[in-house]
Structures are given as C-alpha cells and as structure tokens.
Image (tube, rainbow, N blue to C red; front, side):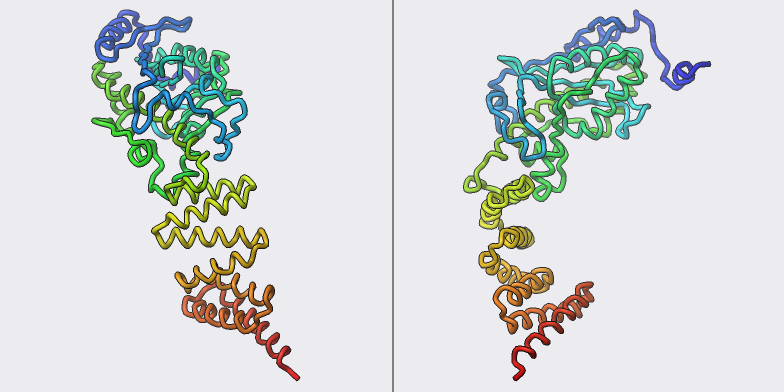
Length: 403
C-alpha cells in the first residue's frame, strides 16, 4: 500500500451521492440564499452577499473604508508600498477545530472585496468532506485575482491551515503563497494592548468599532454545530455560522480603516492616551524619537491613570536621555519619584545625572541613600549596586573636602 492510500484511511467517510448533494443544495437555498457551483472537482456551495458602500457598519460607512489611502500601515510593521484595497481580499475561515493541524478542515471560507459600487462577501461552503477539493479550487481562483490577503490572526491560524489543505489536496494550486499578507490582529495589539484586556475581534467591535452583534454564535460552538449538520442535514444549523462569518469579514474592513486613520493622526489631535502612547512606541521603533516624544507628551496630558502616566514618563525620560537632552529629562525624573518613591531605576538615573552631569555629589548621595533604604526594605536585587554607588560617592565627597 502506497503512502497516499495509507493517508486516505484517516479521511472521514465521503458521501459521493449526487442525489444527496442536490437534495442538500435544495435544502440550503431557502435558508442561506446561495447556489451550487460546479467545478472540475465537483460541486461546492457558494453564498454571495453585497453591501452598498453607503451602508454603515459600526461608526463608519464602507465608502469611507474604500476611499481612504492606506499610506501609514508601515507604522505597524506592514510595508504599504503599492497597497491597493481594490486589489485586496479579506479572508476568514470557520473550521472543524480550533487547534489547527492536518486533521482540521476549513468548511467555510469567507472572502470580502470591494467593487466600484459594493462590498461583496463571498462564502465557500463545504457541505460534506467530499467537497473540499471544489472549495479549494474556487478559493484559489479568487486568491489569484488579488495581490493582498487581509486577515485577523491569519498569520497564525487561517493561512497555515489553508496552505496545509492545499498541500494535502495535491492539486498543484498556489493558494496564498507569494501573496502579501496583512494580519490585522497583530496591528491591533500594537495599538490597543494597553487599552483593552482582549484584542479579539468581538472585543474590538465592542470597544473600538461600535459594532453590536445580536444573537451571535460563540466561535467555540461552531465546530460542534457543523458536525451536527453533517449528521442531520439540518440547514438551519448553518445560518448563524454564515452570519457570524459575514460580520467577521465586514468588521475587518472597518478595523483596517480605523488602524489607518489612527496611524495618521498628528499628536495634537489624539484624544486617547493609550493610542497616543502606542503611536509613540511605534514611532520610536520607526527611528523617529522626536516624533515619539510629541506623542508621549500628548499621552501624558490625556492620561488620568497613575500607572500609565508613570510608564509614559519613564519612556519620555529615556528618549530624552538618549537624545542627550538631560535638562528636559530632569523634571520628569523628579516627578516620577514624587509619585513613585520606590522607583529605584529612576532614582539611579537621577543620581547618575547629579553625579556625572552637574557634579552635585550631595544631591546624588541623598538620592542614593533614599533609594538604598527602599532597596533594603524590599530586598531588591539592586541593593548591591546602590551600596557600591553610595561608597563611591562617599569617597568622592571625602576626596573633594580633604585638605
């Protein structure tokens, strides 16, 4: 027995009955409003829904999404050279398992793209395992018409899963290889990880996009619902899954818009301390420290949380020190110690400033003594370094005052 035959033993039983396939299609038509599409590899069920560009999804219309130029996505680590949303494909899968792996199938693949007058959501549905090849064939045809794939957590889950299915199918299809990929989850985390407890799509919809789902099926219930459909052929079991997938696709489009418009906000127009802080961090790592400082200043003015204010202040002082602007860093270090006298790292920075920059050994020694008392009390690993610093300062003071 060859390897292919051995592997096929692990595949679920296939239903090759054309009669059953047609009956399934008829049952689904009135519920999902799709149609069966024939391919060289058999039939697959396709559902297509069009949204007018004037339609609002949360806070924004789809027209706003398509009419924006996406020139600032490189701030999040995604090169945006030649990025054209008209040549992009939003992609989201619903699968038979949430762990991935070779035994996991993508039974529903949702695709979203813009036309001159609409946003189209096209869904490819595998009504049984024997329709996988047809689904992959249709998916590959759609992918090859676009330059960019846009997903939410696709880098970790959707694209590796689909590429595995393309490989196992041995159809010779390119799939997502050599396509630019924009993963909105990683971008969202860079912007909102400090603001939100979760950067899941539903969390972003609630707190950022203004999207309210009604009667939505939880993602963890979807595989079980699909398995029940395979057993019962009850098409109503798929209705909530299809609706869930549509909202995922459309929400990705407005999330992309929100990420772009936030990235291009000047510091003085920021109205959220967490977003200003995140853009400062991204700007600094884009080698724009002076711009990062402006965003940090805006974040500090907007912040009402002491923990965040301290984090912002520490980062601002560190950038100023790197730029050699010690006089501007000095009041920030002092303010930090007023709020958090147990901040030993800031105390060290201030002591170093007095010792090496202004040669004010008395102030440096006072700060070091206070920091050392905190270190002894908290059993900090910085204790030995502070003791060493204090001894050095005492020697310097003694040498200066010696006759």
